[in-house]
Length: 153
Image (tube, rainbow, N blue to C red; front, side, top):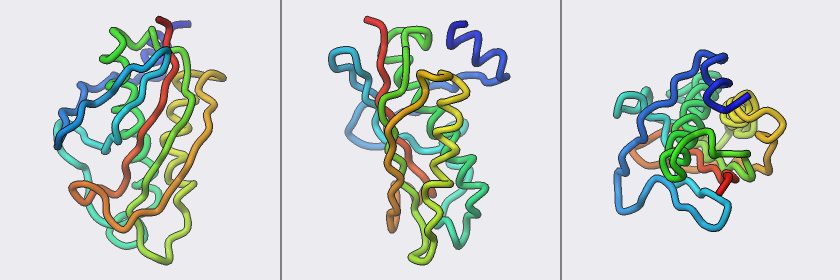
């Protein structure tokens, strides 16, 4: 089954690539890998929420935002290689969670990204990962996710 077919089966529509908010590009190809820039959970050009996980944002909501960030990363990588079906797997995920000092559930939040990638890529979606707390993220986003994909040259 192709990635396009899997997305359709899951009822997921690939979003438009989120335009950069600073001096970078959404994804870079190097060899047979695609590195995405950090992706925020933008939907329709806007953040669905701002603030810290453990204060203004719940862990459950943040998990959904991590999922959206990963979906935005898939879109950026697909655009960089000429189509989502050229992506063959996920190598590494780095997730940042803007959280209060006492919040320790960063891995659970970033599971939103990991679960989405597993659903879309199956076994090829299993990946190495880091989940890191941050005092603040760009635009006061609660989460940011970057992904390294493999692709078929």
